[in-house]
Length: 262
Image (cartoon, rainbow, N blue to C red):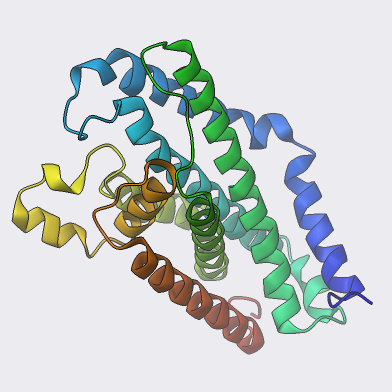
């Protein structure tokens, strides 16, 4: 007997099919965007950058680009589907369905996290293609695969949960753009995606530790390359606790009807 109810599985299936049915809109843009990142920063500029402790630059930026793609898509998917359901009032069907609040939130977060995981795999595949094109670069490998998988799971759930919160808070489509462009993107680009923390002056290294994205990128870099500036176990535990707290917050907001009732 399945521990997941038929209603929860149905909602999850509907949410996954919503973006799977549009692969050219869902999966192709991040593949093209990351291919451009690898061309510009990995192939054209990578050979001129020597601040990564001997690691080829294209391999150094790969974990950061995986985090960038996975978190962005998990957040965007959750925030858009919640807001779109509110805007067109069909989310009321979910509210009146025989589902617990945990099942509602769990289905939305699971579908969005799954999208982030698929994007993470596609970005990794793009990186494998570009590294194989350069005979001077070692192939992509995961030194600590358990850590790599665990970090991808945790960060996609965390940002899917943030996306649910954003979808409940947004009052129009401009709010979604503001959250992505002025909050998520700056955190990612100042999250040590393109540089090691050791390249920063000491004061900025300390300031960077306030950015949660630093722990995600550094932790996933440990999974791929085996090197980290921060203890990866500590980073993983902190992120897992943050994800659990965000899921609880989402459930409580659903229960209160925040953003769901006039």
